[in-house]
Image (cartoon, rainbow, N blue to C red; front, side, top):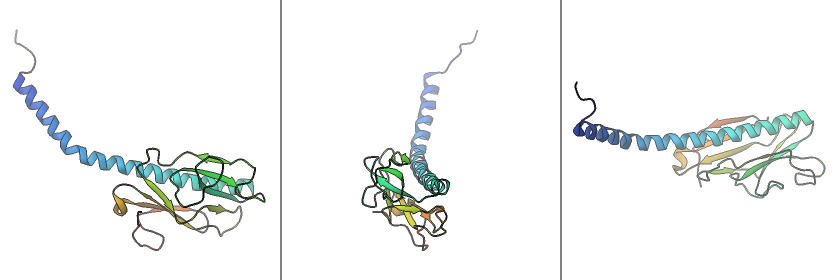
Length: 173
């Protein structure tokens, strides 16, 4: 009966080929993972904007989307990398006694991206065709060449782009 199996030389050649392929695939796989993380952040942001817009319509009152560090109050500033709040923007104001309508966990769970807006908050009115326009830019360690923006129109609809609302290249901090 003939012996089955691999010789030591065959096994070493196969392992060398696998190591070479893994070395060649690693940079491309890292780029793929960063693209997936960026897409997940952009999609979560777009869904949150849609949710805020929908809540304004359903409730029949204005709501505000803003960044927060404590899950209760809107934070000052344009760093949207923390959690986001959807709050009623009624007579008591965006930080009144009423609890937030929705708390969205940190968009960038691993902290490898920056999420910056040109606005402190976005306001969505229930029946108005005019709202807050904004550009929220998502950047990672690749800088401006890989940045993506979520651009919110006057009607509150978000769209994704690799340029700002004026067609210029995005700038990462």
